[in-house]
Amino acid sequence: MDLELGEERLQAQRMVRDFVEREVGPHIAAWDREQRMAPSLLPRMGELGILGICLPTRYGGQGYDYLTLGLVCEELERMDTSLRVIMSVHMGLNSLALLQWANDEQKRRLLTPQALGEQIGAFCLTEPGAGSDVAALRSTARRDRDVYILNGEKMWISLATRADNFLVVARHDPDAGATQGLSAFMVTRDMAGVTTGDIHGKLGIRAGSTGWVAMQDVAVPIENRLGEEGEGFKIAMSSLDNGRYTVASGATGLIHACLDASLRYARERRSFDQPIGQHQLVKQKLAHMQQWYDCSRLLWLQAGWLKNRGQRNTRETGLAKWYATDHSVKAALEAVQLHGAYGFSDEFPVERYLRNSKGATIYEGTSEIHQLMQADYALGLRQDRPLRCELPAWDEDFWLGDDIAP
Image (tube, rainbow, N blue to C red):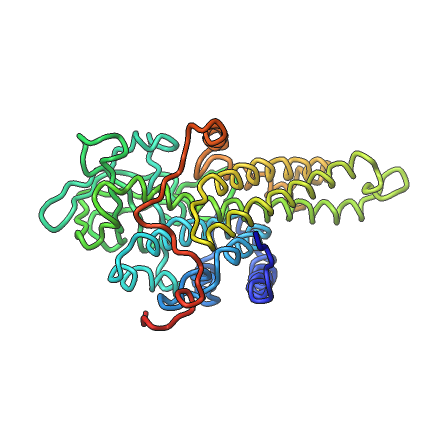
């Protein structure tokens, strides 16, 4: 396994770090306090090429690989989780699904505007009564000649009120098996019957957009079906592989942020006539944070290496997501404890880190779901099989080639 990052990847990482430190850092505490996403954020990320960072240049992307995507997500969440969530949804759950499952016409029509940041993608799987239990999904898609009529409501949808295109999983055949009767569709905001709204009062990720998407007799052309009928569950699970990868690398960045803040405070804060960093139990907390960061980073790098090779990585990505998100919560708790009373206020960013960290142990597969999955892999009860459409390996001729115009 070659984990040499190289100058090009590091240059992309530095570009994102410079962006968040100069344009987001001075304002993020206020945005979080006001519970709003800055209207200029998405256009600016599109302008910098971040929203298409690991999509082929032939579709308007920047042509970087999956390891670069992980580095970008680390840097974004090192500043604030709401920034990484944008990449998880727009890139991981939507755009990479288009790259993997869409036909050539759909890629030109739907993927290219998203790669350029001209349009924003979202992912609609969770419903009021269906989260981890995808088999309980109730949204319907009834075939009527050349269109599907979609009805249903999706909840806890990131970028719900900001997205232009929604990847929606709905049940097209109520008589088929719980997962066999699902299909995937690209629903656009301008389709009649689509309404969206925001959810407020969240514990964390307050500087991001989370909401609901309702569909009432929405006529979706057959040209907007992704993959074949009945492949909705496979498409959703492969999308989650990509989304979980960004969550894992992002949570690693959050651990890094907790460590950075704690190191600064441990050097500056004094008690008993010495910096608190000289106290043994404070050192123990810092050592644990460093350990959790290094382990989390190695896990997502392994998953990214497999993605670059075009190999199935569900187990490795799930393990990275589970470990990094659980330990980002632990790191944030330790950072708050180390800051003492100041960690309990918004004078320091660690209280925001703690609030933000919890969500990732719930969305895109709860920690409990991932724990069961890893046990099943270890017991031999779970085995991944090749999909009809595999995410393409990173290849310079494909990612950077210009033989197909956007």
